[in-house]
Length: 324
Image (cartoon, rainbow, N blue to C red):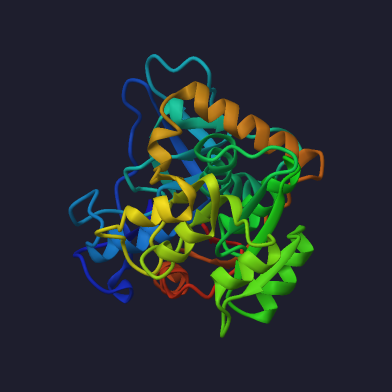
């Protein structure tokens, strides 16, 4: 099979497409013939070595949609020829075939494209657990969404709308501001040259928001804490600007005895039930027209270095895809 291979930790342009042996399914596993793989910010760290999950050589990529090619012993819920989408924390997706634990695969309903399915996997389930569990939203509540035109952000805005919340979106330029408005954001803040905290206070009559969803990290976390409403919740779920180290906990009291959490996807996709439930909601909203995944770019296997460069640069919108 053809696969994009990381031979050593380092720059993206060192990745090369190579011929590898096609894998076989073991007990509880399936082999998926890849159709479309998703590109994630975390993939970049795995390639450079900043976030190590496998030692080189390895195939990057943690999510894809495709067709079940073969089924290992003990797998009863899936069959050969079935369309599925998966997230597997151990990278292997940027290849023509990948071995995946069967319980991590979700069947794709009729009428849902492979592209939409993979967009709803990592980014969609992240938006789902943020709005449903980490800082649950209800009708009449308010939230602040950073990177609102990005992979998670553009879905989180729509999920928050679906739940009846008022959405304040933070974006990086006017082009992204237009997309955020189109997605349904009630207030859009262009962070270039604007004090985000002051803008949030102005939009909320000085109260702040019930929930902050911060994917940026060290550059924004202090203002995120202070933008949170009294006894509200600030969620840090990413670190696009760098990881948050020491945090001044007095800011939580200063903001009004707020709650702070730093979740990770693995704790919200712990078993087959969580995969099925979260993806079931997302597929239902998508089929009803309430949730529209946006594609932000597509490359072949040879384009993996360019795709990783694009997502690491932070200037993309929607979901980036590798068509295998």
